[in-house]
Amino acid sequence: MSRSIIKPGLRLWLLAALFAAAQTVAAQVGEHRNDFALGVGGGYVLSNVGFTPKVTQGYHGGFMGGVALRYVCEKYFNTIASVVAEVNYAQVGWKEDILTKLDQPVINGVTGQPERYSRTLNYVQVPFMAHLAWGRERNGCNFFVQAGPQFGAYLSESSESNFRFEEANMADRSNSNIAQDTMKVENTFDYGIAAGLGMELSTPRLGHFLIEARYYYGLGNIYGATKRDYFSKSNLGNIVLKFTYLFDLKKTNNPKIK
Image 1: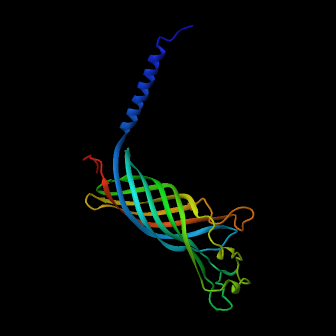
Image 2: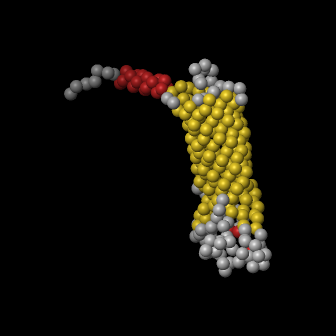
Image 3: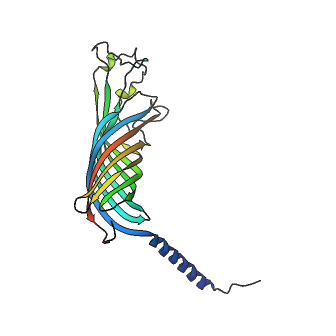
């Protein structure tokens, strides 16, 4: 039987050297960055709630705004890799489409007006997203995509309606689910996945201007979802149109970065 001529200790050193060399080669593929930027952002949110049993809805409109932090860590080939964190105040909720079976507005028998109902839910939302961009970093435009988890903390709620619930016209409604109209939010912690795409304009003196379209899909429910609860699903869904301004706190000292 042949015996290895490489001693065990030397073999460990060789493996360590090969690992270090592989790490060095991998590190040379990407260009290191150490850029921090801080800023503010705001926009408009179109939202609804995925109720099961179904509640017929349109989109609820609301404002969102807050602060943003971005850390650029690497440029890998043509991809600029960053991490983004935000803390936003957001007005979300739902707006019901109260219709007949012929898709006509339901007229309230007391007021003589089409019945309307909407609920506004106020949240603090905190997304953490991986941000990938292609194009210019400091002087020009780039295109980006970003995605990651988002967490939300419920603050308060309010509702708007033009009829009294005991006087609602249930006979003409195509959708008779109205339990949600009088139920308060039960789960004050929200979580889900956010993803967006957009464009960024950067200038050396003024900073970074970003415009983005983002979608959030809630994985939690605003109401209980056990067999004893009325709704088996009641998750938030948001479409966000957002503008963000970032200014640099720290930039990598490399004149080759464009």
